[in-house]
Image (cartoon, rainbow, N blue to C red; front, side):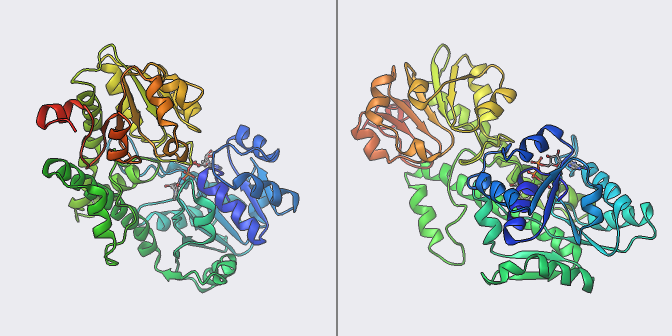
Amino acid sequence: MIGAGYVGLVSGACFSDFGHIVTCVDKDAAKIGRLKNGSIPIFEPGLEPMVERNIAAGRLFFETEPGPAIRSADAVFVAVGTPSRRGDGFADLSYVYDAAREIARELNGFTVVVTKSTVPVGTNDEVEAIIRKTRPDADFAVVSNPEFLREGAAIDDFKRPDRVVVGTDDARARRVMGEVYRPLFINETPIMFTGRRTAELIKYASNAFLATKITFINEMADLCEQVGANVQEVARGMGLDRRIGSKFLHAGPGFGGSCFPKDTAALVAIGQRHNSPVRIVDTVIALNDARKAAMADKIVAACGGSVKGKTVAVLGLTFKPNTDDMREAPSLVIVPALAAQGAQVRAYDPAGMAEARKLLPDLQTTADPYACVNGADALVILTEWDQFRALDLDRVKAAMRSPAVVDLRNIYKPDDMAARGFAYVSVGRESVGNTVASAATAPAT
Ligand SMILES: NC(=O)c1ccc[n+]([C@@H]2O[C@H](COP(=O)([O-])OP(=O)(O)OC[C@H]3O[C@@H](n4cnc5c(N)ncnc54)[C@H](O)[C@@H]3O)[C@@H](O)[C@H]2O)c1
């Protein structure tokens, strides 16, 4: 497994748990040093015991030097990053191509080179060409095997996926991939064999569709606020229709994370490159960017039109719960926007604060949610961590200077919050209590 990041580490650990012998290789020596001692560099529920167990069983190894592992491997997976390239949004494939050259030099006997990284259509043709050029004598096949796991639920997603997509026309590679994923047949996971380019596109089409679904319900939320409807009920009413499904219909502050923003941008760039524009996705990106900024305005409005000199407590910084991943998190737009307007922003996140401090160096963080809200003029819920769903609300209210809550994840009920004496603003639902918005447009409830 080349690359021991979120995908490589989880995939490597799960494959070893299936009984395969796995070596995870990463250029980051500090990361490998920690992993060798059983210490996990990322926050992912269930991963640490699985890694420990498989190290102890002699099935899972960590190395900085890929040579020996590649030489003895039946399959070499590439799980390196494919970030957005500055300027044009196209995926930066330099890590993938570097890995291909490194793999090529070590190939020994028939080896399947499997790209797990999310890569644009045609990338695996280029990977094959690079390996062929570097090692004309090598016996290998290049396979596309995109990964669909979600951070925060990665182990379950990997072990019980909805499908495994394997893009290859090579019969020998197909057999090896069938063996690698054989433990999943017990769960009757559909393994879909397709052409390589189709497999590459399935990944982007899936992520872009999910991002579109989120953006759709976010626009519905805005409309709900204007017409007095409830977006959670709209989403439930839609989701009960099995043709639509209930997943990814939660209105919020806009999508973030390491995948949707870069994969939507890359799909648009792929479309442009092939003269086949993907206009829906282009629009989704623009709407999502605008939404993050609009959320800062929503908070300012809930604070009476100005946050100057006010203390805003933010609960949740990561782009979603159960991860420490801060990449493209809405907080990275919202927190600086509030600070720029003179707010004193204070934040707490169960797992993301160390990462957040690197990206938001001026951010003041606290040891727990209650210290965060102490003396605050407004509380903003940005990420729906479980522990924020079960806050002692009386304690929160007593600690705040003014009990205004902006819940951008709709984790509380407007009626409950009003009954407890909060001014409460959420997404796509009625604002309650003595909120500035409701005071201006309707009698306070
Ligand atoms: N994170 C997710 O939830 C997720 C889900 C599905 C697919 N993906 C895709 O999987 C790929 C990896 O994503 P990630 O989040 O795991 O990235 P990551 O940044 O967490 O990890 C990538 C790792 O690869 C290492 N690396 C880079 N070049 C290397 C080389 N030549 N040799 C050894 N190590 C090398 C880096 O040091 C890093 O540790 C991306 O294409 C991403 O789009 C990610």
